Length: 266
Image (cartoon, rainbow, N blue to C red; front, side, top):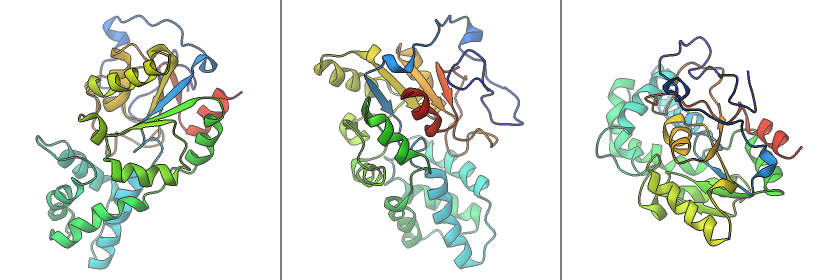
């Protein structure tokens, strides 16, 4: 499947999905061969969806409410509704915005749309778990690279996620710190400034993420080397993450953090 390199053209939309979006390569952008992983000093990480299994956390909380109410529950349908609600104009910051999101999607799921259940979805966030390979992979990578968290989550939620991951980060940037959300380039530029303060530069960073929309596309536009962790490789579509206008063929490509850690520490 071309793991570890973007040169073999991974299927971007999950198994069984037809390729619908143009890639940057189809627009004529020429890419040099990807730099070896061992040449980087830093790895920057999306957190929610790459390291923390937010889809299972979200659908698990909703499924518990559905079970209590005797309502049939379809996780993929819930993710579709979540994605649409989360990307409405003028939304709040994640995960406080889950209170609003719940009230938007609950009627379509047959769930009660009251304040108490809405708060319950948000309050479940501290219990969201890392993917099974995340903790060990980050511990392994921490021994060789400086790891930087780059998350659209608020600081209060990130602190729970960081603890669940074993506090692997050299530095962390949340939406509370940056004042903007990815894919805004301003978020990335604050990370560049931090790295420069330590005597390094943008070229010393490998950006690792599962979201084409929030991370892989913009990191390419900013001239970074990137690594796509295709968490939904065995599933159709983008789940709870917005679909990008165009697919970006990554410099490095793995379907798990375990694979990245193995390749980057070999």
